Length: 371
Image (cartoon, rainbow, N blue to C red):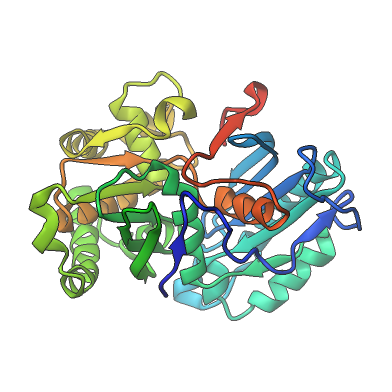
């Protein structure tokens, strides 16, 4: 699916339909176009459940509340074809926390999305109905193309004036790749997109039978590389790599974790990671460090933590395969994604002049950790 994001004349993409106005969680308040209006976005992925509540401001939006938890909703979906009961319970418990947070922000306009795990599950409709009944939150299962559009919209402010770019998002159940063109007028046009049913959670499960870590890493890397080759070939990507005409943006927990480790952060700090440059040779060094690191060391690392530790090998393999196909020198790291893209949609639909080329995400200090 092709789509264009306009940097300098933000008339706005079509806003998500079915957004819920929150008076508590469900209600009937009108946000209007006031700067005091509140907006909320929930991204329920295959691995994580994330919430942002924000208010528009002159050059972006200010985050008032946030939440993130690893729920592994996609656990076993590839093998069984449906969402298992423990995974659904974990996700619903996290969404109940989101609902309690939303009760503190009455009148917030909410849009909540679910991605690959729900797209792939036979019992997705039953799960959506259960979420609505138990939490008051209406989930919208979005297509892979919409997932790519929202991620690109959130990251477009990080693009420079080079004419082409690769934007990728490594998720729990899938990985989205977007090949884009940046026009002289600042418009960003998506030429082609690819959604691979390969995220950190499903790859970890698929290759769990390989005991040796390096062998497992190599097998995962080879699979992703083979899945990317046709996409790169049909877009003639290799023909223009040597002319400094291609840029890359990576948005995912894998990439931000790599950046935090490369920077030597004693704890993860979003403002030091988002928008920074990560050299490919530094990414290779972090990969080698991770492959040598025992499980307890990964769990204890301040930029990894217990919940993400066992998924890092799969994330590193996907990231390595992307670098194999597009051997650039650096990439731009984006600690932003679907939630930010949703918020921009909602705010612009209500008449707020949120320009993705200038939008900044301001964080209230006491909730800045763990977003």
